Image (cartoon, rainbow, N blue to C red; front, side):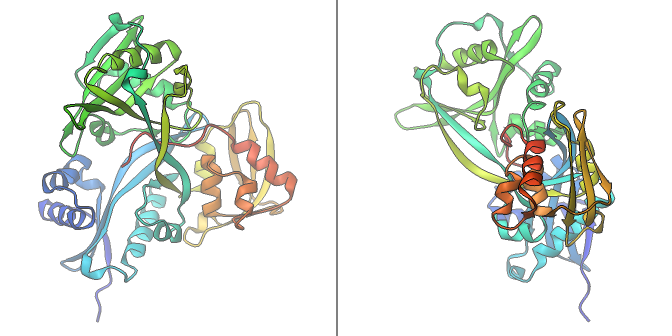
Length: 392
């Protein structure tokens, strides 16, 4: 008789070693980094799918939040999804993801996000494309050169409270930015053997801009400045930070940082000297629709209601007829309604993040309803283009 799989928490060094071996095989992560990863996350956030003593697959959780509509929504990032090489193609990854989603639902987490290696796999688990990571490159000799260095200070740690306050001031305005836990903050400074230096621009005793960056080699002794974080609260502080980074232009060819379409940070350039690339999409899963809507923010000037019928193949709590009500900057899903709009859980994720409008979702059948109701849904969820600064 075949032993049924058990989805369980990693318990000891042996489990940590199995996790490391699996992610080395799957992602070619250097051994040192793979063995450090479960300890950075904490074994309480590492999961194994096992049959007796045999481990078939693994994944890890990043405990975090995401900002939507100016409010933090509880979330768990999923990473390190790996299956034993000889067992791939047998549906084990789908079993693993279903078990992970069920656990998150039991623990009252609203959202789950991930960066997919296979969009089809995660789509079957109810995830949908919901945003992207965008790389910006600017020639260093095109950066502002006006000296504003009097307030520039070196950052000694990613735990600096002034720097974190600066991040939060900006993140609250950006759909999709992460509310980071400590493992994610640690990656800002050091990841896969790359240690970055941090600098902040201090104005009136507060951090108004900062950057964490490393130097990536190019030909002929030149380098690029590659930022894991580049954050500024307004135009003055952005100009100050760009001027500081521009002082490296004698040896550095390009500044590389992560942003989003429509980011006001890009408006400080007088000329179209930068170029943006979509590096990787990320996906979102609505784990608890009622909780997600209640935690999300909405524009305070908008009021409206739409009756929905939501389908979810995995989670019964998300399935059925609801009425979405938005007023005074908050929303709620109340049971019941006339089901004027039908929406699957994947479509709800893309709508929730602002990645796709209700009209766009109707193109492939993820959302169906009258033109008026679709327009109302689009207006209620509109906001800045969803993006993240980092992969996880």
